[in-house]
Length: 280
Image (cartoon, rainbow, N blue to C red; front, side, top):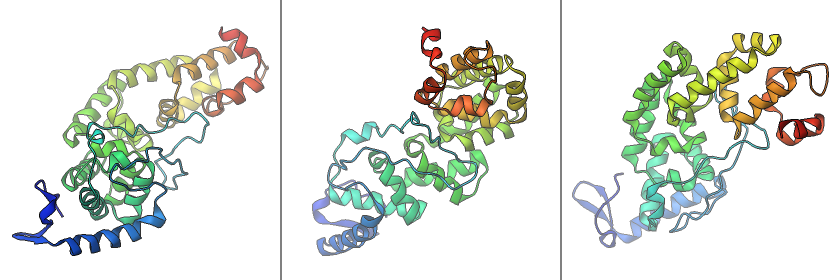
């Protein structure tokens, strides 16, 4: 159902030319909330108050979230979030998300980034869903899953995604098909500045050349390792670690590239205490 932009006191538009009365709105609201409650960890109030995203292991291949202690949480902010929503608006938007993404995916997305998910109307959600399918050449189920995991994509201008993919292709010097795989691994790269992603790739290449096994690993799976690096909250620090290890610091045996990138900083410092002194 489309959101009524007028005065909600007269009821909600359900069919052309007819407004639902208050009891009908309340009935739909109770049904939706009863279905949503067991699936959501956040409360839905007139302010959509909960803002903390929930991290979870994602079973879908091709969409991977780091389990490192420093994995960045998705920013649950939007200009629309500063505007309070009344109960009818929340119910209409919730119903719209369910119609586009399906109930289970919609509620899972709301539990992670409620303010973002409730900041868009049904038309925008549909456009974002369709744009992801078109740009990344994926099916509707996978596109819905991506919107759940990376809710910020819902509030992004859908028309910007195709130019962004083209810009990433140029910045990385990769075939478009490989860039699509990269964005499947980390969908938020569709929102990053392409030039910064290109610079990070070239720095990773230079760092990997410091150790033959790293260079071989990167050559075999460039998408996996670049996605892994871009998901880190401090990618620069991971590249500094590679410099440290390549100089034979710590132990004679250099860890594999994946371990270097995935190990949380605290664990790395416990294994290589001299790193703290070296980097300063």
